[in-house]
Structure formats: structure tokens, C-alpha cells
Length: 223
Image 1: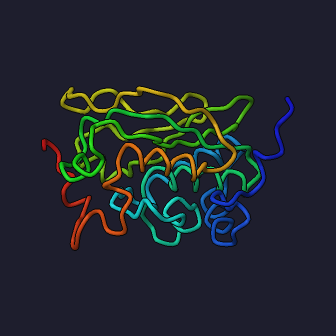
Image 2: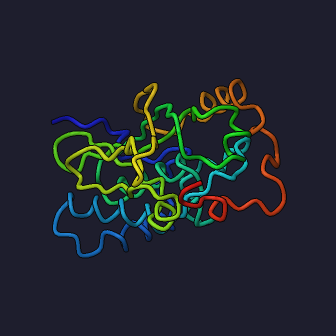
Image 3: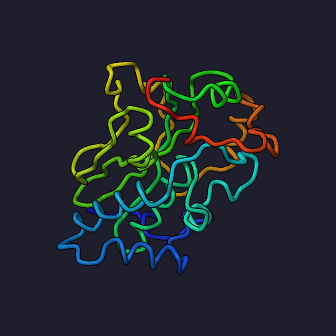
């Protein structure tokens, strides 16, 4: 099967050549028995080593960067998916990034207010070819956050798509995919931020969240 060379090359936001990303990926994949095992190890490393936090500055490029989210240790779904994609490429596994709009039924009140609705545009996930086909991997929510929110953590076996569950542990609506944007070799920053400026302008300012805002503290199960 022919693989597009861009699936293994670094990009502006998917910096698979970055020394810190290479080191992180090699450490996570150390001891893997094969490419599939390595990809699975990378998924869990990114899912749980980098905490999910959407209280970020959406109007600056570094917020979308794999290298920056690794250095910071927290970020939202786009840079986490970019990091997983970069890590896969760093150890020779073809990877790309995909996007969809999702209706999130369990966001914090502040996040819903700033977003302007319960539809979150350009949610990101990685697409990894651990064997012979592209498989979706969603590393956004770390395990501890899932426990706070009362949602099922996403697992990934490298063979089947890992996408958000429609219901949480209490059978409340959780995530619903409402539109697909397709697959990309790098983060389409200009296209994403144009959509944000149109649909959620309150997030496209320098400090949309206010002093002391803490997403993890606000993310409590049952609320």
C-alpha cells in the first residue's frame, strides 16, 4: 500500500522533528513489540501525560502546536491530536489529523457561554496507520478528567476507531458528531480560526476566561 510521504513528515504545527517530541515518543514506545503496540503506547502517553484544558488563548498559533502543548503539559483537543500525530511520525508510523464538529452536552457553563452554543467546531483527533488502514484515535480527555466529569475514558486498540461516547456513565447525552471536516497533513490554522471568529468570537480575544479560571476544578461529575 502506497503511503503519502506527508504522513511521515513534520509540519508547522505537527513538529515530528522536534527533539522534545522525539524523546517523548521514543520513551513512550520503548519496549513495544511491533508498530501496533508502539502506536497504542503513544496514544495513552499523550492522553494522560498532557492534561485536557480548553481554557486557552484561541487567537495565537502556539495554542495549536504539538511542541508547545508538550512543553506546557496541557491543552485542548487540537494540539493534543497534533502531538499524537507528531509522536507517531517521529517513530515512523504514518499519521494525520482529522476534524469534526461535535455537540457537547457536558461542557462547563463558562465554556458554553464563551463558545456561544453547545456545538464545538473543529474538534480534533489523530488518524494513525498502525497496521494497514487509517484508524481514528481521540486522546483529548485524560483519565482523571473523565473521572471528574463522570464520562467513560476513551480506549484505543489501534484497530478500531476511538471516538467520543454518545452517553456518559449516568446515560446522559455526552457527545454527538454533527459534521465532518476531513483529514489533513497539518493543522489548518487559518481555516479553524476563521470559523472560530465567525461562530465563537468571544473565544478569540487575548483573555477569554478571566483570572483564576480553572477548567478541571469546574469539571465535576453530575454538574
